[in-house]
Image (cartoon, rainbow, N blue to C red; front, side, top):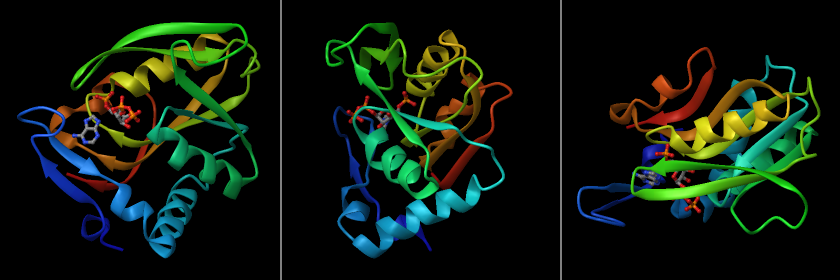
Length: 170
Ligand SMILES: O=P(O)(O)OC[C@H]1O[C@H](OP(=O)(O)OP(=O)(O)O)[C@H](O)[C@@H]1O
Ligand SMILES: Nc1ncnc2[nH]cnc12
C-alpha cells in the first residue's frame, strides 16, 4: 500500500519549518490502519519479542495494537508525572522542544526482549531515550518499528546496532 496517500502533511506545524506528518487520516480508515499494523507485524516476524514498549501518545496507537496482534505485553512509556507507581525517568530533546519520559521501574524484567514502537522516527530523541529506559531495567532492545521515518533527520544514527523497521520514508 502507498501509505503516503493516507498520511496528511501539514506545513509549518507546530512551528515554522516543520513539515508535520499527520497519521490521524490513516487511523481514520479502519482497513488501512489494520493493514499498517499487519504490515509492521510482517516486518518484525523474524524477531523473538517478549514485550512491546511505546512512547506516549502516538506510540500507543502503533505499539498497543501491534502487541495485541503478536500476543505480547505492552509497556507504556509516558511523559513525566503520569505513571502512578515507581518510575525511572530521562530528559530528552525533540525536533520541537524538550520533554521527560518515564517508565514503571518493574515494567521490564532483566533479559526480556523488547521491541520499541512509535508512529514516527524524526531526530531519534524519543526512541533513543526509550531505548535507554528499557536498557536501564536490563531489557534487551531487539528492534524499533515505525509507521514513518524522516530520513533527513537521520534518527537511525542515534540507534547504533539497533534494527529499524519502517513502512514509509520521507
Ligand atoms: O524522533 P523524535 O525527534 O524524537 O520525534 C519523534 C517523536 O515526536 C512525536 O511525539 P511527540 O513528542 O510530539 O508527542 P505525541 O506522541 O504525544 O504527539 C512522535 O510521535 C515521536 O514520538
Ligand atoms: N515532522 C513531524 N511530523 C509528525 N510528528 C513529528 N514528531 C517529530 N517530528 C514530527
